Image 1 (spheres, helix red, strand yellow):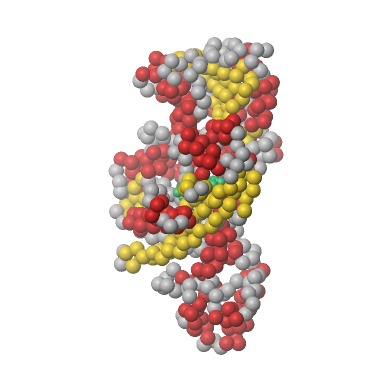
Image 2 (image 1 turned 90 degrees about the horizontal axis):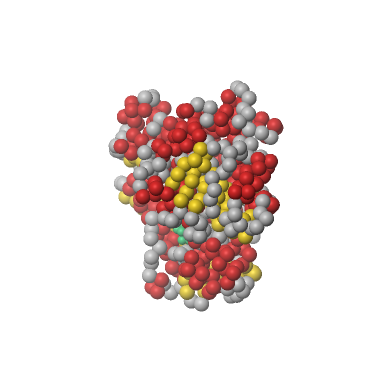
Length: 621
Ligand SMILES: Cc1cn([C@@H]2O[C@H](COP(=O)(O)OP(=O)(O)OP(=O)(O)O)[C@@H](O)[C@H]2O)c(=O)[nH]c1=O
């Protein structure tokens, strides 16, 4: 237990991870570190030729990423972070440095270079300690790097392209992710695995030990005790005193001297006692407590949306808490607390002049933004939140909880729950529209659909996906098929534009009425709403409507076969239980369903976020 307590040293500091990499976030939060994420805006464009070694390049890039965030936060925020962590992962092969591929061809070039060979993965890490004096930012940088060697098998062209089409290579150095599908390409690994994934956790902890527990002269004379950690008073000077804490000689001064007055014998006993207690203490349950607080953070976000805080701040900013309070008709003290939490969550920026929206808030939380998720937030606040309060019942009974929330029997999920009034229906459609707009472009471009001249988006709601399909394929005629009430309101969501002539709405119930004829059927986040029986019913209707060669584009969240990955898909599965008659399914389950109904040649592309797209072709019965 040498490494965990040192992470605990950072628990009371404002730690910022200057990285957008979800892997780094996961590695560090799994290690119990509590931190905010502020992705760096530093452009990774240093002149590689000016560095003697690749790792110096990685360390310098990591340092610049962290310093950019430290400086930006210092300028924009009243509270300077205590520690900013930056990292940069690169792959080197035959003297070349490979970063993230810019497109599929670039990924192809990288992966073919790595095929059958050994390469090195370097991650440079910078730990920047910040302090501010007279509004001046002072930084102290500690850097290190880690190298891991990885050997790839010989990759066939087919495997290589299949891997590239999975979408995985695009945001990863060297064009692969060892932790996921890319693991299949790897024959052997020598060194720290997590270093390849993006963050050398082991070396990081050792670096923290060096920074926070530099050896004292007496320690240097005695054998190291690996199950004890030094007393707390030996580290605190690190971020406060320039140069303090890292040289053993300085250990003789400061707080340790004060203790000397107590008497050498007394101190030894106290330290021994402290060591004993520390050694038996379990690690601080940071992650657990964060999970516990998760629902409060969600509710704060949803409440700020409901009060239209982000709308007011989009119109005029910065604004002080009392001004916003009067606009949203709320108390000044309550509003200030809510705004501070929103700022801490990275949704608002707080300066002496007041609060302003961050880019995220302007883009997604203001209700009039093109990609607004405001409707989705309201749906979560008004409907899903209530359903989740009955999660225990949902688990016990294995079914959704609309009947408890509404206090009556729900026979037809959509008519009796989501569409029970014009208001609830509109809110549901707004929510679906926001989510669909966000993902529609990716869905429309996941495969080459140019061979189809007509498509039917079954349960296509507001036509957000139809619009992107029409934009991507100007020859394609798209029919959106949905319930009559939905079709009636859907027109309000369709802006004018060149695509309008390609999109038609048809009213009907996909379980009861015949489906409009088309060469390509689209089922986007439909099947997960329904039980296996209903899924079979719907798929057999689609299959009957298809001629051989017709396509089926299925978009769902695919669970991994073991249902073990810590990904959004699993929580989405719980969400389906609480809300619907269906469930999320694995890739294998969907593949079986498709094949059972005569759809073969299944291709799968993972989209950003939790969705996956599958394209299958109907074969002759
Ligand atoms: C080799 C390998 C790399 N990666 C990821 O590749 C990105 C490297 O790029 P970066 O420039 O260091 O980081 P970034 O993603 O741009 O984030 P940022 O820190 O904001 O620059 C990081 O994500 C890593 O996890 C994997 O997930 N798995 C692997 O096997």
